[in-house]
Amino acid sequence: MVRLAALLTVVLTLLLVSGAAYATPLIVNGGFETGTFFGWTVTGDVAGITVDTNYPYSGSYAADDSGTSLSYISQTISTVVGDTYELSWYLAEDPSAIGNFAAVVTPNEFDAYFGSEHWQLSDFPLGAPYFEGSLYYTAVSTHTTIEFGVQDKFHMYLDGITATNLGPVPEPVSIALIGLGLVGLGLLRRRTRG
Image (cartoon, rainbow, N blue to C red; front, side, top):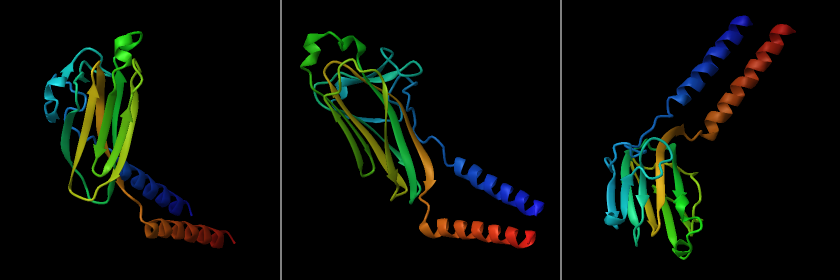
């Protein structure tokens, strides 16, 4: 019985460790620490978006948008069909916008795209501190494009972008088999005691 418990412990540990192997960052230069948009394709209002040191979330750099129309940055990452991914980022408004009445009338917009998933924020509060946003997507192709669209005539900052493979979506049959195996182990244990 002790051997069975030890074997079960080893199997469960291996399952947990193998799941953790999926948590691998996939974004190139997600913190903009090269000081440039290296790894990103910039489109739209390219003059309106820069990488600078004004207000990073972490590290020394962040993307800073102050354009009059939408600026886009995008990157295509390798994905595994059927695996679920989390795309996360940090977004903030310029803290100097607080109390700036000229900035109050400035509309702004932020869009995040991950495959077919879309997240949008309009009229982001002026001077708002960094907050984390995220999207989940189950890959249907071996390559998936992520894209961020930003427009803010004052300044909106984007930093700390990551994409993490969370692994395949468990199939109901797999979950049922694991449950059936645990019930069988319980019955086996009960039989050996009685």
